[in-house]
Image (cartoon, rainbow, N blue to C red; front, top):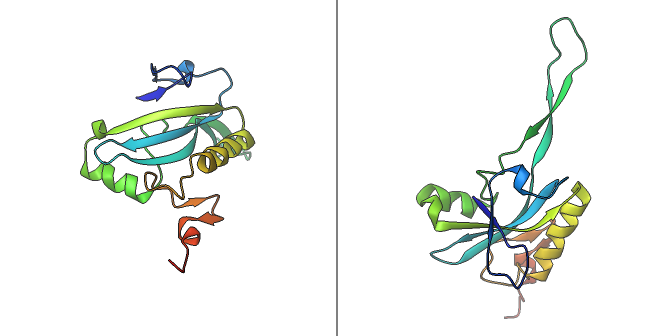
Length: 146
C-alpha cells in the first residue's frame, strides 16, 4: 500500500490502493521509500501506465498498441540496495509515500529533479540515491582534499 500526505501540516496519510484513489489524469508520481530499521530512504518517480506493442492479429499487418497498467502497486524502487533489502527483509519494514502526483512525462521528470535537489539526496547520508538525471553523482561532490 502507498500512502499520500495531502497537506504538509497534516499528519494523516491517505492510503492509495488503486488508480481511482489518485487525482484524475494522473500520469505518475514522485515517491519516497523508507527502510524503517535503518531510516535509509530512496526518492524516485513511477509511471502508472505505459504503451505496449503487440503483434498483429492473424491476417493483419499493423501492430497493435495497448495501454497497460504498470507494476506501481508492488513497486519499491529501482536502486540495487532497495532490491537487496527487499530480498532479505519483510515488506512491512518499508514505508512507501507518494510525495506529489504528475500529469505528464515532462512534469514527472521536473518534479523528480526538483525533489532530489530540494531534499539534497546526494549530500545527505539519509538517502541512498547516488545520482540525479545521470549527470550529477554523489561521488563527484566529495572534496578530494578532505
